[in-house]
Image 1 (cartoon, rainbow, N blue to C red):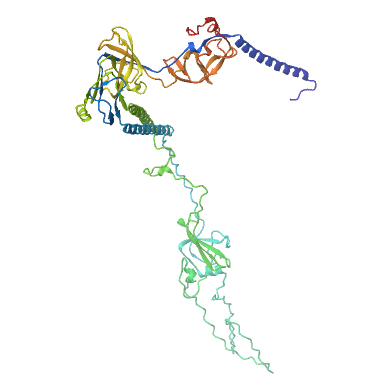
Image 2 (image 1 turned 90 degrees about the vertical axis):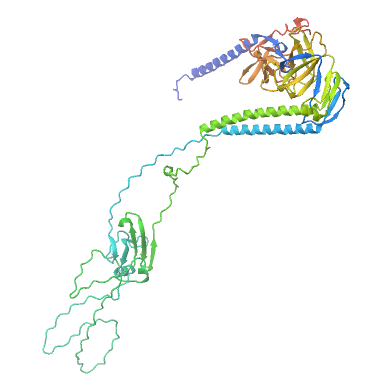
Length: 630
């Protein structure tokens, strides 16, 4: 920008500097204000142990009955082979004594078979999911848009022929173009049966007809006299004769010479006409018209070809019009005594034109470059594949359950007594299998037992030796019982109460628990039973109250108290939710001893001072934040 010489440049510089300083002061002020607000803000904090819980596994409720005469019965199993029986009928046994041993070889093969089956089901599920992804990424078939055929162009009117059409080409035929050279020959428009005359061929070759008759010179009629003297007449000489010089005499005397008889004129011979290539084999001529008597004078022609040699071309066109396509033709060069036949050569176009599909055969399928499924077909295929995946997931779960059961059978290959009692009966396996009766029965005579049922989903999570809690409706007391047996076979019916957390369509398995302290129990008394299923996670995992967890673009975070006694945004990794209000903390950034602030409200900001830590520690005199003795 050009400024006048007297423009106050100093004032402009001062103004710009002042604006920059003002902006810097505003930014600094805002930053200081925000930091000052955070520095002066105070937020209440809570210890993690006060707002979190631990998870020991899922609980399941069922219903059972107390019995004082418990009987342990063992039924034959076709899939298990007994290798050894350690007791006989009438033996007294205690809880934990070995009764028999199954062959582990067959059980191990069963485990391996179930492992292969599980892998197969997982592979089928994986392939189905890949096929679903492929279907979801497949573009539907789109019917190609066939353009409307362009209307046929109006034919360009063909100009009328300006050339003369010849059936006989003579030396007086006029070409419609050309200069007679090799590059620009004379061009004649002909019919297919056109002929060439002798006169034209001689012109073409540049040859004079040796048999041509010269034009006679008229002789004056002599006057008769007394002694007529014969005048010599002109006699055409065919060839020059040598001259003989006579010897001189004293008195030369002229002797009358006899006039020779004139030779008859040469009559032209008749020649047949020729067409096509025949001229090349035999040069012929057309017939000369003759009339008797006196000759008829021939009118002078309008055009005569120049003397050759020259080059001529003879063309046959459609509809005898030189403006229409060439049918055939030939060319003659009088200098080379040759003829060349030719046809028009159509040059290939630079760009290859695609065929017009509007006239294509409807029975031929054309490649469209995409899939051959319509949008509706793809939607149906995707829905079917999703249903197949759901079925395969159930198959995978079933295979995993069968594998777990096979492993339990292998682990429990050694059968031990679950009661203190006597071996009441021991029969052979064939008899027991034919009568569907137990082959080994141990009758207990002391203590109380609980007989109840558990859902198949708890197999592998509830084990022999686990403790269950039972409560009586009649006396209101709680009883602790130890599981001593879980059946290998599902119940015939599921007339057992459970809390509804399991699938009601799944199978149930009977289990037996022994009550050590059975004070107040009666035979047949009904009991509510609570089962505690083992958790897959570590028991020391932290499950934080969800209200203390917030998220932004960076992920989930908590306002955790740092070493400077101020809260700071700390990002965490989370897992599953339990009881609908606690979220698992999977990262190591948070422990039960840490303090966090409620992340909502005007004072909940990064850098705020923590308030409440002293009350939860020093001022409680040995009582921690949960109200328990330290």
